[in-house]
Figure: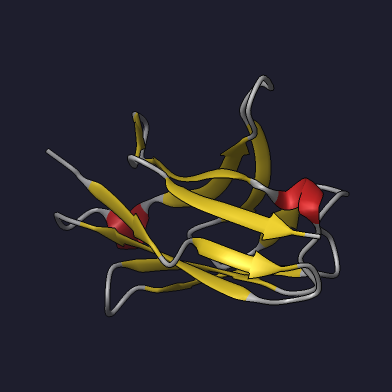
Length: 114
């Protein structure tokens, strides 16, 4: 059973940076597409960024140019570097794994103060 554990969330001022991590258990990380999604209070969960097995990346328009998704297959870890944070980025951030079946982590809270 694959488990995903996010970390790195916290409280930051607008304009600041955070780096989220997602550690995956098991041996399927290398062969899985990965993504980050977020859910703000009262809103639906939305796609933030994705990375394929081959390393191709995609981003939501709202974070393009500010966020960078990356993966380290030797550490079974997915990252999200978030720069120039805005109050609108405040949400619970979730890690997602897609290996033919989908798994979600428990989420990590990111709060950006103005």
